[in-house]
Image: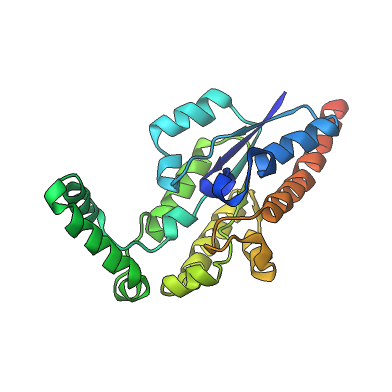
Length: 244
């Protein structure tokens, strides 16, 4: 049995509060379509919320996914967590977390968070703070590719919706830079890139109101595009084996 491993963040997961159920996500749809067409594939969704390229190359994650599952195809859909501008740096986050744990300081912590959130565009314009800066993003992608021996399909970061652009300074340029970096690494390593950025730019209906999580239509689009990759790949492999 061939194995498809999906490595993603919350974009590849359910969102019950917005009516994105398990039966709607592309991992489930992909499995159903492959089963219906008689393909011997098992789709494993290893996505987790707030997942990043940094976590994807951690020893624990690699052990639990690549080393244990040994996939035949990887769908790598990360990046929005990496590149998204942050309001607080690491030490600021630790300080606020400590304040929130003390009853007398909790109100002050909430006021700080609320003030920064209301003025998010201004703060992200003043100083760019990211969970994974672009140099580290590039390094993490290269490390991940080195660890794999199977085909990789990268899904690039979607085009930012209106709300994301309104609240984050130059988010469109930031995402383009991260996607360009991904394109270079994919090309150098014979990987495939699904241009989800272009598709979401043309079709705003693929994004939810927050400007980056994806709709049912987007899950259906991803399913269709992945099937277009998997089915020819399987036929080519079978043909090669027959010739041998």
